[in-house]
Image 1 (cartoon, rainbow, N blue to C red):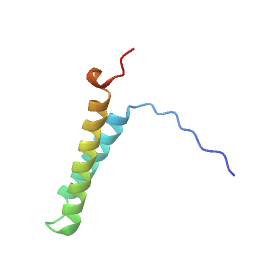
Image 2: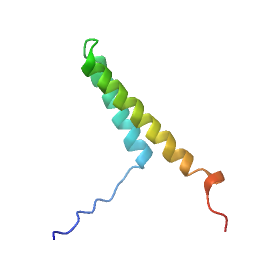
Image 3: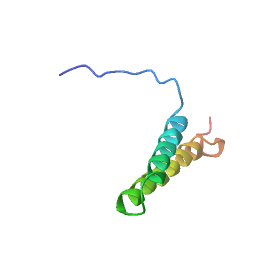
Image 4: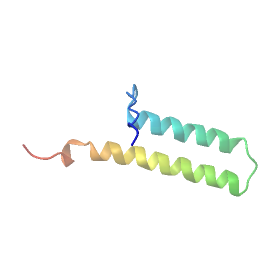
Length: 66
């Protein structure tokens, strides 16, 4: 099997997801109303939810007690 390609991320997961959501919203804003636009907006909302979930999971209240 081939080796896994490792990439060192310079930005947090939250930043990358937020950027993706913004790009999707911008693309959607340039489209007329319709299924394609709604699909992009839905993907943007899901990305925002994912970003909030990673914040929530990293919150101090959910960390394992030591």
